[in-house]
Image (cartoon, rainbow, N blue to C red):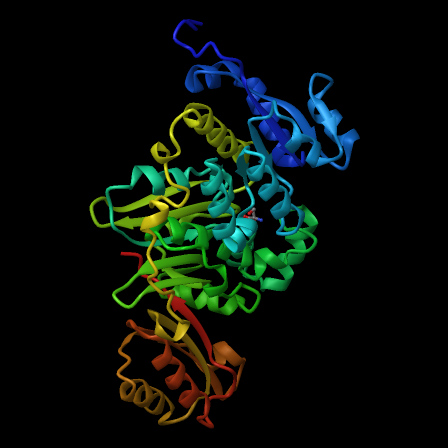
Length: 448
Ligand code: HSE
C-alpha cells in the first residue's frame, strides 16, 4: 500500500461503551477492513478500550490487545481516548455517560435513537459548547447511510417529505401476515420463537422505535429541534389479516411507515400503518429490510434500501462516523457538518402539527347490515363532510359472514382530507345502527 500521503500522526483512539452484537461488529469490521479504512481516513482508527459490565464477554470479543474495564467512566477519563462510542442504549445511564464524555472533550458516536430523539437538544447543545462532534448514522435505518444522504447528499434541496420503513421487526411481521394470511398475534409469537422479534417487542410493535427514527430524520430534513414528544405514534397490534387482504384486492400493501412532511401549516410527524400502492418499490420491501423515500424539490423522489439492523450493517454506519471524525476532528467546529444539518443558530421553530391537522387519504372498513340504504347513508355522511370517495369494495355477505349472513364488509378508499374532518365523519358513521362493529380506519399514502 502507498502510505506516503497518509497522516503520519498516531491512530485515533476509540473507547467503546457496551460490546454486544453491534460492538463486536464494529471491532471485527475495523480489524478486517483496517487497510481500506486507513486509506480512506488518512489515519488509523483503533479501539483501545472497551467498557462492559460483562468483562468476560468483552474480553472474548476483543482478545488480549484491548484494555477491558467494567466502568465506562474509566474510558471517559482516559486522556488518550479521542472518540467514545456509546452502544449501551436507553435513556438512563447512556445519557449520563454521553454528557460526561462530551464534557471530557470526547467526540461521541452513538447508535442510540431513543436517547437522541428524546434528549437530542440537550446533547447537541452540550457538544456545541465543547466543540465536539456527536455522530449517529447508526441510529436510523442501521446500515443505510440515510443521515449522510439527508445532511450532505441532499443539502441543495428543500426536503418536502420523508416516508420510511424503518423498523425491521414490524416489516417482518407484516410480510408474514400477508404471505400466510395470519393475524398479528400469531405471527408475533412465531417471530419471537425464531428470534426475529425480541421477547419484549413493545418499542417495535407499538411504533416507538420507528418514531424515534423519524423524529431524527424530521429534525435533519427541516432544521427543527428533535421533538419526539410531538410525534403521533401508532403501532401494528390492531391490524387484522382481513384488512391486509382487502388492501391487496384494491392494489395496496400495508406498511408501518414513519412519515414527516413540511406543509404550509407546519410539520407532520407520525408513525402508523399505511396503505401504499403495491406498484411502489417501497411497497415491495419485505422481511426485516428497511427503506426510506425522501422527496426533495430539486432531486425529486429518492429511495434508500438496506439492512436496518444487525451486527455488521450497523457497524458499517458506526465506522463511517468514526472515519468522518478522523478526517474532521482537527477542523474548526464551524467547518464541520452541523449535527442536525442546519447551523445551530439557523434552526426553525416551525410547529409540529397536531394529528387532527394532518392531511391524508384513508382506508375505511365498515362491518354493516346488508340491507337497503346503508351504503347511501354512509356515502351521505362522507359527502356532507366534503370527503371524496376514491374507490369502494363490497364483498358478498356469504363470503364475509358465512352462508346466510346478513352482514357484510364495506371498504372505502377516500381522497385526501383533514384528519379532524375524517374523525367527525367516522363518529357519525359509527353511530348508525346499521354499522355493526368498530370502524377500521387505516391511513393511506400514495407516495407519488
Ligand atoms: N428493533 C429495530 C428493528 C432495530 O426491528 O428494526 C433497531 O432499531
